Image (cartoon, rainbow, N blue to C red):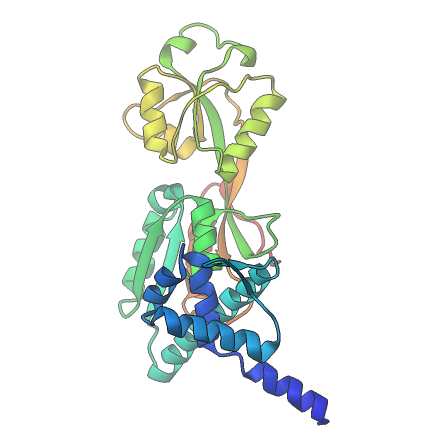
Length: 315
């Protein structure tokens, strides 16, 4: 190895996890004092650590503006690398602990509500029963939130609307979920009105991937989109429709369940979406993830042919 290569390797190896943690903490807090407190170090130690990082690599990351320190544009890229490296180190550490101790440990699962309550409730119960030594932690949240937590390595696997098009995840399609248009009972006492007369609407928030698809399909069939209320909770949207306050678009498995099912405005679904098991690509994977996904695929395959998943897809 020549001297230049040796010097480059030495510079690379001088990047410490402490330096990376400092940069990530600064990006996530309003002030350097808050960032230092979150790490349990003094503000001066944080400043010295950042200065040491800049000096070792010959790159300035923050400019002084009076008493404020402002990040340069390229600093955001450095922080992104730091977050990814720290996430991978966390995964590797957990993996080594599992292998070294000869135990499975804790599996962190995220699910959207319809997956947790309707489609895979029994499958999850069976999986936990079959793995008494495995601690399974569950989070139920919208797709966007689950994917963000997965990206930060806070979850091992999530079951959500397929993230096709994002390019950042690996996914295994599990089933197809139908969504239909529902109207208050009074609107359907006679013949259903044409789409141009539909609304006002009670829908998922605009931040929802499903809402984007709903808006696109409603416009395609000529339905005006006048939204009176938004909620991530299907139960709330159902109740608003039962009270006669507006129309909605919901998964049929949720809207047509229970003692007072909603009535469709048209027989055919407005759209379908794919529910998938999603993981972060690369890095060490929890040993139980593949087995958990397999149990969900088995459960989905036991449903109706129209709901069965497709073959696994990696990105």
